[in-house]
Length: 255
Figure 1 (spheres, rainbow, N blue to C red):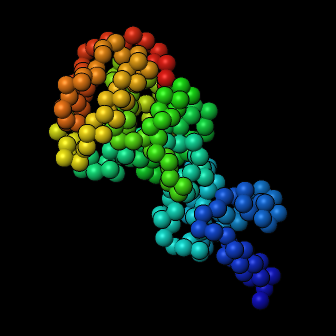
Figure 2 (cartoon, rainbow, N blue to C red; figure 1 turned 180 degrees about the vertical axis):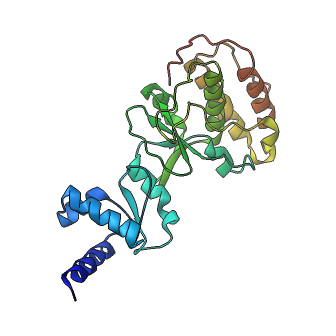
Figure 3 (tube, helix red, strand yellow; figure 1 turned 45 degrees about the horizontal axis):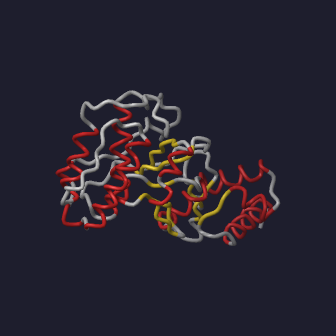
């Protein structure tokens, strides 16, 4: 076997010792490789040998196809490695069966100081620390998936951010591929499956509206104790928030 062949076999054997998801830093720590050696090896494994698949952008997170060709099964783990503080917004209403039409992308809220990457199927939305504090009690955590807002909170937050965007407070230039404006997926009221929503969901949505309307600087009191169904509540808030009501704080403090 030639020297080149022995090196390639050695590289493949080392890849076989890694798990289904790894980072470039893992190669440096485990094998003592320099930055240059790591980048050359990853490029070869990806472009020529088709042994790894990058998560996207400059995240330096990779899926090990030698360990498991079914890379998408580890997508959430890879995403958490790249952006550990991300929270899914909007999507939870779909994943919990409230709406049938899936969002055009996975929408994730991230702190303003977090570097963003172009990752297929993902849209990132910067949020300031105050937003994370406001929703802290409404986040669902799972060991292997990105945390997400509970469905009622996700719908309320999507409505407020879209209205804020329309008010021009959030119209900022796109700075990174995959990062857009500020608002996420907002379904129409007739797309909501009311039968999938429980009285607890209605209370959760009402609580979210009560908390977020002040946080986003909305001037109209929206909570209504006479709401008897999730569809009625969502339709009412949808009409009010996306209507012509004014905003008390055009700077939109939470975003």
